[in-house]
Image (cartoon, rainbow, N blue to C red; front, side, top):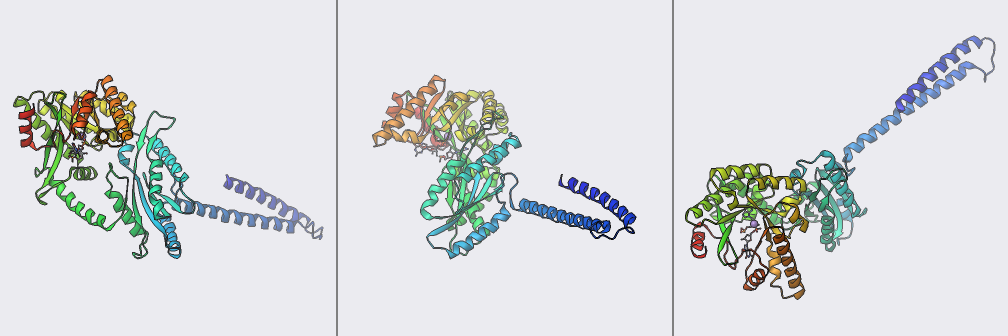
Amino acid sequence: MKNIAIFVIIIASAFFSILMFKISILTAKSSFNVYSQPILLTSFFLVIIVVYFIYCIISDNLTHKENLEEAFKFDGLTKLPNENYFKTLVENKIQKHLKEKETESLYLMNIGFNRFSELKDGLTNDFINNLIISKTNDLIEILSEEDDELSRSGEGSFYLITTRDKTSLLPFLKEIKDCLNGFYSDEKTTEEVFTEINIGVAEFTREKNQDFNSLLKEATTAYRFLNDKKEFYKVFNKSLEESSQQNLELEILLRDAVFNEEIMVNFQPKIGRDGKIKSAEALARWYSKEKEQFVRPDIFIEMAENMGLIEEVGKHIMELSIKELKKWHKKGYTDMKIAVNVSPKQFNRELPIYIKELLKKYHLDPKYLEVEVTEGALVTDKNAGMDLLNKIKNTGVRIAIDDFGTGYSSLSYLTDFPLDVVKIDKSFVDKILSKESDVKNKGEAIISTVINLSHKIGCDVVAEGVEEQEQLDFLNGENCDLIQGYFYSKPLNKKEFGLFLEENY
Ligand code: G
Ligand code: G
Ligand code: MN
């Protein structure tokens, strides 16, 4: 627009100048009055035009340069500083911090949405962009202009540098979590997604003389260390570095674990109201021959998830479980069922395909196989979750919701999803034993409500982590269908489980 205006002015001025020049030639001989001298007037106009023209070019160049600088400094979508510019802001903050009082601390945080790439799957760019903008605005609301600088570091991640005293770090982390975790939907679509974040934190220490890069490395190491399920933040310390070294070793070993037949399955009995075994939960075990020890399942499962090995490992576990179940059936334990855990990362389009494949390969009636999915897998993207559950349901296997009550799903999820089994999490079952009557009463009320509702909608209920008679008595009183826990048995290896079946079928 501006360019067109300049062009019109130049052309008009040029015509005017030519006209004046012509007049000046005609009148040159007849008059010598300075003020009516057209040559001077023409020159005057020409000077104005040239000055204006130069001004336009310069100012245009400047705004162009400013725009370019903006683009180099800020993220296009959120208008937050990008990583490059953030680096400068952090270095300034470090310099300022070094001059200030020692009571304040400086923290660099790496904040990221969990499983962002899977969350994005099946959603439009517009939806994701709106989600990011909305979450960014929420986050900016809780920041302090003086203490904090925020940057968008990746599609679903942020860096934050903050100066605060040590005691306010945890409350601040919780505030960030409360602000970014939760359901999101936009008005235009029926999509509803659930976002959760993890935060890796690096603390600046004067002695270590860190710079932006070293702080970032520590915050990232802490972030990578986080496990989806338990903690949502981790502050870097030296031992993390060592264990990330160990993890690296384990990762190398895990690649060959399936091939080397190091991954096995243990079975934990699920007992009916008549005290007899009805089913078992398959729990993966990895014995590393190289390390000559077992690696904890939560550790190697998460590792497999992060390394993209979870489908291979998960399929292997499901196959081992089905093979074992077939052996039990052959031995005469013909009603035995088996439940296999499915990681949220395994919860994708491939899953119903290989379930079908395995059912066919082992001639197994699907009613004997149950898959346990956690709430997290369902709530991340409700529509996608629903779609997939229906596909799995169509294979004929039963679907159990694991750890019910620990995530964010509401009671309405029980009725919305095609479930067959609800597993009440150990944390509720523990409350039955609480010495505080308020805790006990509320815990029991929740269990009782979940059992009633589940039965009304045709779901069976399994109580997890039952260890004491008192818990068993309460659960039996509430008509809980199946009991799983150390009260009856810990997870058993094949041989031990065979003996358990002999005595308890
Ligand atoms: O026994 P326990 O320590 O087995 O298991 C620890 C955690 O690891 C539990 O939360 C359990 O759900 C998970 N887990 C165990 N086996 C499997 C498996 O085969 N697949 C998945 N995804 N998780 C498993
Ligand atoms: O999350 P999921 O339900 O898949 O995990 C089962 C986990 O619970 C396994 O780690 C298993 O070893 C553990 N577990 C099973 N029964 C009990 C119990 O009675 N007490 C405790 N503390 N853990 C249990
Ligand atoms: Mn389970």
